[in-house]
Length: 317
Image (cartoon, rainbow, N blue to C red; front, side, top):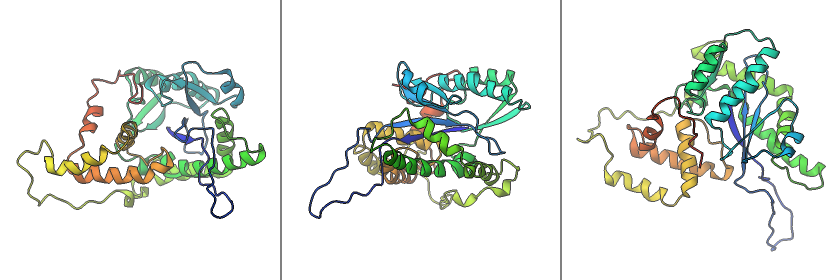
């Protein structure tokens, strides 16, 4: 079970025009507008009802009218997953689905360690209803999360292709946020997606359980520095060492920097704006080089949450 963001704006398109003329492709959708969708899958390749989140104080009727009947819809102030919206999904969508499908309990649900997924209220709900929550090891979702390993990439590839086909079939109209659930439903109904899910569980060693199935080559190998002389004060990084990273971060939009830090804490691949992919990985490498072997300070801010009852997501305003 994990969520990912889907960009609405058309990307990667070629425009044919006379030589020497400036050509611009206009889009009504914001290039930065991403819609978060949560997917729940099992080792047999089945998708449970997904959840799409919108950035609204009140969900428009058009959203419900456009989505498939079984598709869950939610709203948050930020458009990102929060502990409240995740709890409501489990309580009002996922648990009823398990009962309708007569799925034998207990079941195991694998999650990343994001605090929106792990709260005291949710833990009690799952304990009372036969759901065992397992938080995957930090910074390892790229090798241990089936959706990250084998599902999200092909889903987004098909999403991109279907966005283009939508414009062809609808006289150039762009995909709107309310069209997203129905298009994604077409994607997950494809036979290949079920095979991808099964491969994801197998490739992560979760089912069949096999620790040797994990592709450990994806783990970043770093030269051991155990023989290098460490500074006397190991609690902080020297000012000179930190200066290049600080200068670089000062040139990045503050909100974008917060998104980068959030993605780094979650440990998975970059799923935000495609044009920020190279910038994110370059920034992440600088962070590793600056603070290694210590953790960056913003890791401590998230990890030191007082308890599991925190109900606000870090993306909330």
